[in-house]
Image (cartoon, rainbow, N blue to C red; front, side, top):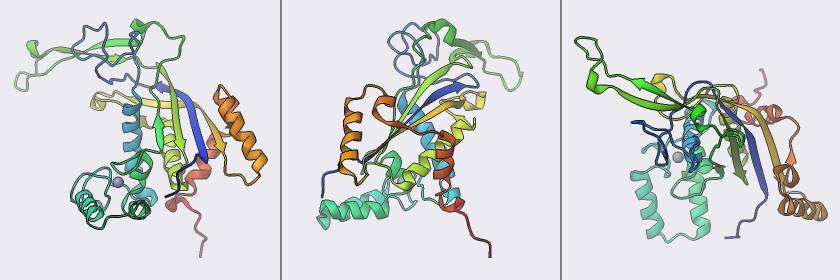
Length: 285
Ligand SMILES: [Zn+2]
């Protein structure tokens, strides 16, 4: 198998703005006295772990993928994908052992037996091609107290319909309107990977994104603003141009130094969404 070399890379930057409160709990809860604190950075500010956002983004894409004509197992067994745990995965592993596959054979089999969302977001057999950085508040937001609210939750007695005293509890949320810096990387995507990424981004840009727990309490509604897309394309035939782009990429300090900012992020999303099987123009008979 030929070693992989970097050919194309995309970087999606933007602001994730909360339309409602957000609750993402977790291990780092420095300085909170709440029963159910939100996750914080070591300096006490709330943040959204990249893995949490990836989970929300993945399930958003998984829900839409079948509707647009692509395959998604949703990480559930018996959907014809070896990415999910279950008999399909163990049968695949057994065949791989018994037939002593070469790396090339494994690659061919994975191309046939992994669904489109497992190829993009990763599976036990293939690394994720999309990478989500932790979403931090902007550097100027230093007042952790203003960014976090404590809300009361009460358990209601079914018979008396009164609050049960000892079942009162509180929980923290990140305040509505708080923003976080969004950074998503995509490495050597196929055209389907790009289209699925644009599908997820489009939902969040349109204000239809959700993240974190307690959605039944109306939490976690968010929107991506100011999406900027940067591209590194090393697939050009012109050797001098390729060397120039690589040098710029390796020596640059900021995304703008390293890559090319695409002029119209919305047009990029639309172009790639149109490649989805269900959205291709069908000529009228
Ligand atoms: Zn799958």
